[in-house]
Amino acid sequence: QLQLVESGGGLVQPGGSLRLSCKTSRFTLDSYNIGWFRQAPGKEREGVSCISITGGRTNYTDSVKGRFTISRDNAKNTVYLQMSSLKPEDTAVYYCAAERGYFIQSECLLQRAYAHWGQGTQVTVSS
Image (cartoon, rainbow, N blue to C red):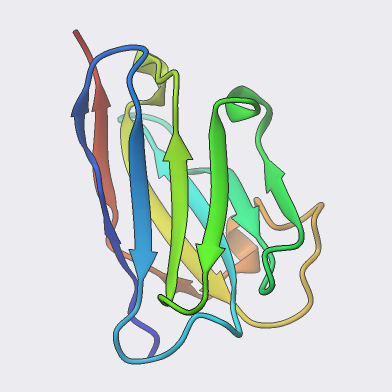
């Protein structure tokens, strides 16, 4: 079973930056589309960004466009989410998710597009 591990979360001041990583140790990620999701307290989990197997196609939810960048390094078996200009409303547990198959840009921010999930990493944006 594919096991995903997120890292890089923490406490950061508004306007700061963090880079999240998503890795797996038992399999390679180079045959999986990857999505980043987040869940704030009392809110539903929402899609943040997603990237195709080759990295050639990406998508972002409107609230993070221009601030977050998703990328992948298949040689390092890692997918990144670079987060800049962070705001308090970005505070959440961030999850990565993976799935094989055709990358559908209009659907890659939906939870149902993914079968494999990590345990999450906490991001707190506060002064």
